[in-house]
Length: 284
Image 1 (tube, rainbow, N blue to C red):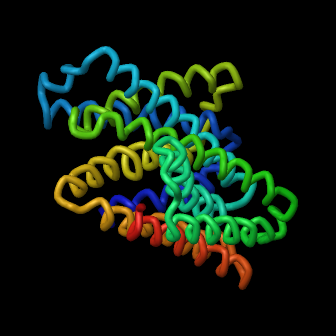
Image 2 (image 1 turned 60 degrees about the vertical axis):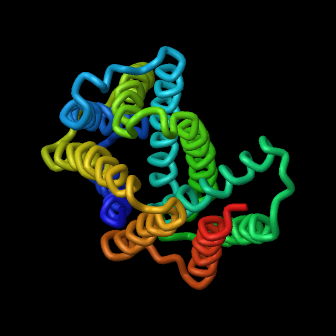
């Protein structure tokens, strides 16, 4: 799980590097990433399950396809956030806001009164996000950080819908089935959207290498490792281990692109991470 989360953390820097070597769009990156990952996940699913991978009820198939739609749109929003706010802010906001949104929605659906830990986590998340809004990772992004934060929150909201939809499948199907169908659906959707919006398919060799990396490593391989680990690891531990993603992304953003959060940004990041840990250890 830690390896998977660390690989997820490399997706943001790889995307930022791709923006630096080619003229592309968030829709195009999402479409190509999913298109590369989908056949790899389908092959893995076939190897693990064989013919059982096709044993899916029609209603559940629609839910899995919806998950693919949400995954594709959340990735596109995340990639747009990176181009506007940089890797560190986009990743911290997206990853750490998602469990907050999931918890709020779950509380509203069950109509249970939020506990003190949920309220504390929400306050930390709101203050942390506010502090990150005021951060300028580098002069070139000074005027677009707010837009990037907006895309980050959109990505986390859509991904929260992906997680909530996935809960309907728990215990019914192997996670690889859900992932394979979801990635294939997301690939078809994002290719359709990218075609209508202007599909960017012209990349230098370095650009294609980055795209192959995005599809094969932080998508197909990382999800395979993650689902293998979750079969024997408690959910609370999983939630904490996935903190490796924003930590890895932030470290790489600093090392590779010189992005600096400053005192305000570090405090905001710490509050977001604290909120995530609170929810992981005290989900009720």
